[in-house]
Length: 360
Image 1 (tube, rainbow, N blue to C red):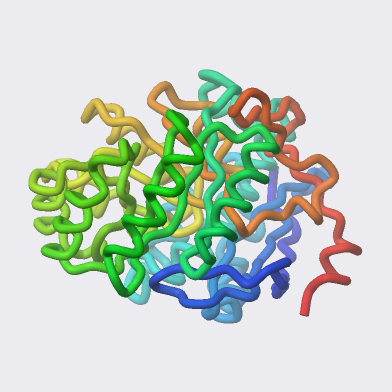
Image 2 (image 1 turned 60 degrees about the vertical axis):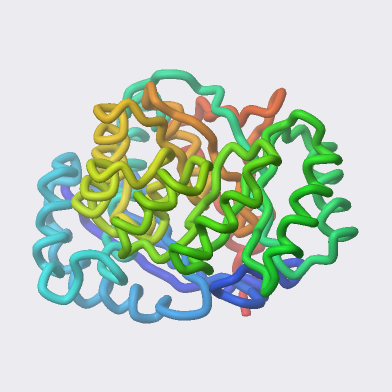
């Protein structure tokens, strides 16, 4: 399984509608960096990473100039060894950040290649626990009017979703409470999740959690900056809501610190931001050892495999940055659950012509 070729590309993908949250503001597009690996037998593996607003060209440069020469000619089946080589090659300038994004794209491609060579779907290769994963529609909708928010939710319910996430973090807490109340009325007893995208200080987050607690929320996501472990502990203990966090953490060590401190109820690794499938699985095991469920952020076509592989899966986020328009067989939803596909590898076949035509 010697790696003979590595091809990487960058695409800027416009969104059908401008989305918004409390950190990134208005989002009109996202960036996609793809990697294609080819071994000596002609077998292929596909990986990718995404960004918002910035960093895609830097990720592409790291792959091309630093990681590609490191992997060419190597045995693609030694995924853990290759991951360690990539991590330590970029450690001085990385320990996460852009380095993790670049490593992630290659790591995903290596796992896809391994599963394809064994003619197994990725979720079975990684553990094969349960292909049916609870899913929620992840709205990026902070600046939507209440009417737009409810219309979006009605459309998602019509698609088969049974759980919904909405953004909070408006300038006035009363506005958030009003919108959450309207959503609760529409959803009845269906699961409702909220995401603040790091908007608040610890004191503001505690106040918001207490105000939102009567609306029976599954979790409050990213209530404050990811660096404040002690602050997360205070929000968990004083706010009255479970906290989901981790999409902005970049290593297993950061997750270990947050979990051991008691600052998170739903660890939320994103395979792109934490360096790929290899560390994601280790984080899921850390959560399992702490008797915690693990969830995901974005990249739902890949994360469905990871959550299907582990015994402590909670919800799959079906994200607004989807590739459905560029995939032969998009994610399947049945009775509010996403179904991990049985196709070999991660099962994603990209329509490159459509992707090229859409990219700006």
